Length: 500
Ligand code: BG6
Image (cartoon, rainbow, N blue to C red):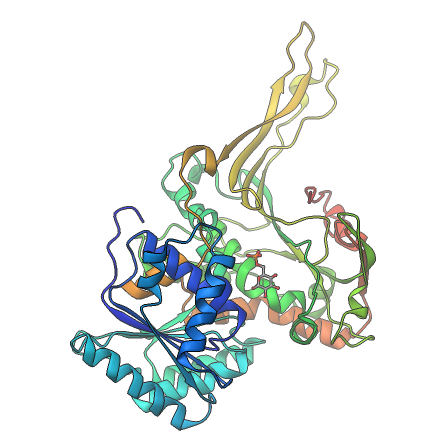
């Protein structure tokens, strides 16, 4: 972002503006962009939500919450640039008069700044709002672009709850908007280390020649959280770990790690390769899906010495629920690069610690050469892309322990981002917002990519639905997950890396 320029003037309209996302992430991200000189100037923000609120009160709320969530000292002049023009519109998402009101406010803003009509609509509402809002924006003409003016829409996740609903949502939106206006956000793609996967793979001559089934034994993708479901029982119990995390975050990581090199570092090439990769993931029949997956719920336990209550005791969660808070999957990719290389994915709540990493395990060296020495095993060769909590890249390999006899020890080299680069405070939304404002969709999945993700998880959704409570495992809160997940890898002679 160092050589980047501020985007053209635009107005940002946030639907669901009184919610957490606006206060916690979007406004702090706009502030960080302003600090970096990358906020369009002048800037206008229109908040839309159901509650009765004056523009003045909305603005005061934002002013108050900014220092709380910005994770840095607030400079009053910069904050003024972000909140220079704040308008609040009260309205229901399916009431056409809401869009008339928004239209009047936008027209006034655009008149004052001399007719520049670029507009970014951010749908930060619950998912039920996506289709009606998208359709009203299209039909009302508010999102009509042309004559050098752009109109774009960012849609939060989850984009659908299965393959059929994701397809239906795409169809509705594409009936009134062009694909290049729709930005389906996945906040994992805003994380620096996630973006760096492409640079690591394709800007180094070192890795690509060995990035295939001849050299790689398997890949583990872990997104472990220590957080419990907390106050999100209502949302979470209807969704579960698989739908909440896998088609979006975990499959984004998978596709970046496994896709073929795109011909150019440009949105269409990258998105096409990612979608093709997901298309090559082998679809499993019901028996295979049950055999190659583990789902579980957390029970009572302790995290950091705090007692945690079982998922089933969470507020707004059905006490007999079969919704999973943990999932582990074994996937295979049916192409020349990856045939017979398993990809193991796991994610869960209330685990021992927070850890997001992609670990690439290289094939074992033959031990034969050391047969007349006391060495009976070698450490495993892992390349680890650490995403959270530490942004790093680590290599684990064998080295000789100094001394007269042959003895081998596992050692590691780790590159930490903070040791090399000045990392400015970030919410993870800065690059995503900036890219959308300049019209670069490289970090936003296209309709085909979203549907390809749901196609991968649909067999698991169906198999679990039919199985009901049968096969649902449990794990202690604060543990590394259920024993069944260990068995999934043990059956292949492998084991998970530790979580904390
Ligand atoms: C969200 C999920 O998309 O990602 C949450 O809905 C989850 O359930 C969160 O906690 C994890 O994000 P991060 O950035 O903390 O890994």
